[in-house]
Image (cartoon, rainbow, N blue to C red; front, side, top):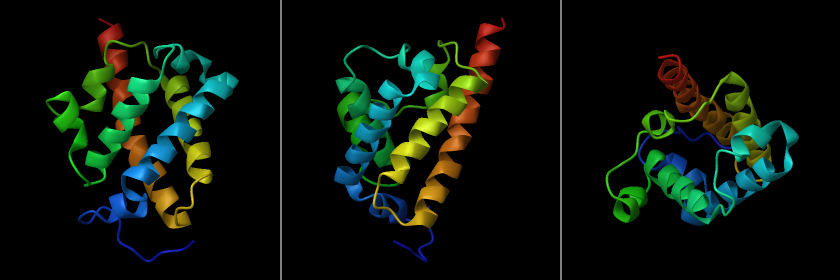
Length: 141
């Protein structure tokens, strides 16, 4: 699948991701990768054994983040800033790389346009890097 869409404008990214059903599939594949990749064991251990709520929160967060419906705040209250939500965890560059690899592999399983997969991976690297920076600051106090 190819596209000439300008992502990040209006809800184009949300639409390109297949709306809520597409995001749900992406997140399910992402957490399946986290469960199976040895290099993701450290970040997987930071999550509860039952990933039902984690899956739901990430799906709803991505809906809002991609300019779709603001489902996260509707269900869980005030909007979330990803770096602040993770500051209490000992996340480092290795964890960011493992998280990004899980997302990359999950993206490869989706029927998204290739340019959207690349766009989304690039965009997700921004909050992932901010999380690492904040966690390092928080844990080096």
